[in-house]
Amino acid sequence: MFDSCVTSLTDADSVYNNFMFNFLTHYNDKKQPFSLFGHSSFFLHESYVYRQVGFKKFLAEISLLSDVYFVTVEQAIRWTQSPTPLNKLNTFAPWSCPKR
Image 1: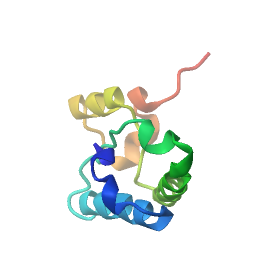
Image 2 (image 1 turned 90 degrees about the vertical axis):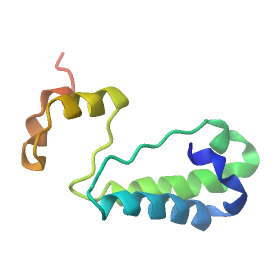
Image 3 (image 1 turned 120 degrees about the vertical axis):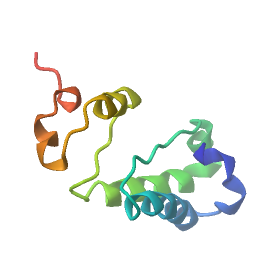
């Protein structure tokens, strides 16, 4: 749970750096999935706006990476059941948007 180590997160930069350090540990190793689990209270109190700023900066930066995907737990499970190479994820049905 990312909200279990809040004492060291005192400003937007420390929030950003904490998330980025942990993400890069996964990304630069074997590109294993990086899960984010926490409570909304980490962000919601009015004195915690800096946490939102740091987290949004983190999300914005990693979303620029062409091999990073934001998926639900269910979508991640579906991928482990049917591992698909990076160059075919555009057509991986469990990650596509439903058509109406």
